Amino acid sequence: MSIIKITAEQVKKLRDATGVSVMQCKNALEEAGGDMEKALIILKKKSSSIAMKKADRNAKDGIVVVKENGDKTLLLMLHTETDFVSKNADFVNLANKLADMAVKEGIETMKSKSLDMINEIVQKVGEKIELGKVEELTGPIIGNYVHNNKSAVIVSLASGTKELARDIAMHIAAMKPAFTTAEEITDEDKKKVIEVFEKEVAESDKAEEIKKKMLEGKISTYFKEQTLMDQMYIKNGDITVGTLLKNNNAKLVSFVFESIK
Image 1: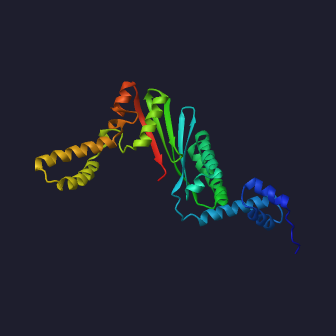
Image 2 (image 1 turned 120 degrees about the vertical axis):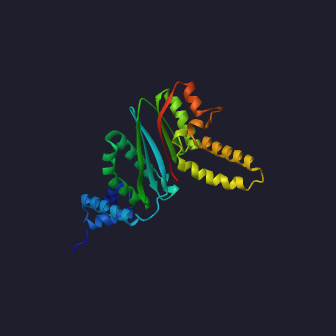
Image 3 (image 1 turned 45 degrees about the vertical axis):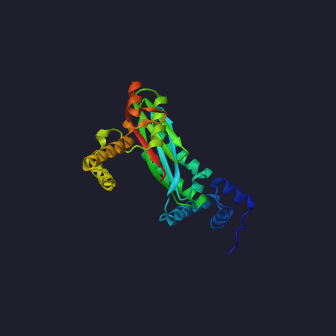
């Protein structure tokens, strides 16, 4: 059986087309008998196999990207194993390509095409990569804020300005509210908080009546600090976010907040 001689030019051409290592390209070309198209198929098949082998790893790092297109703003999370790979150009480009595709062609279309795109980069970087949450808000007044590519917020207003929406998005990224309004706080939420602070207050040597007021104060303060509309605005500690909206004749519709854990 004759041995096909693989030239450096062939390896370079395949490497330029795929970005994978020289050895992977050489092996694929040898397996394909020097046929470039077959070598591409082999690499694609192997990239899927590599991705499967890494499926049980924990992709705890990654990035968050935000894309705007007309009245739509989309947030996409792409996960990988380490912060080092999360800063890799191929990984960052992949996240942006997926987000661009989602905002232009639709989230479901993007998801249907994402696996091959992801597997190709898995082969390059050698880590597990998986698509995280993808969320979209639509509206005439939308602002967003991205912090270090690790957390992002999109805010939609029924009235107000884009600048105000972005300021509120920045506030949410910093303060991480658990609730939007006090009406969202359930009895179960209150029960858990009461249990925590009851134990703390019980250790005080104050009279029972004072302990009761201490408990009420701690619970009230906690929920105000966790509720967006009651939080003190980070750019002006004299007003709450609710007052900020009222002063600007603005109304919050919804917001999306995601962060790499």
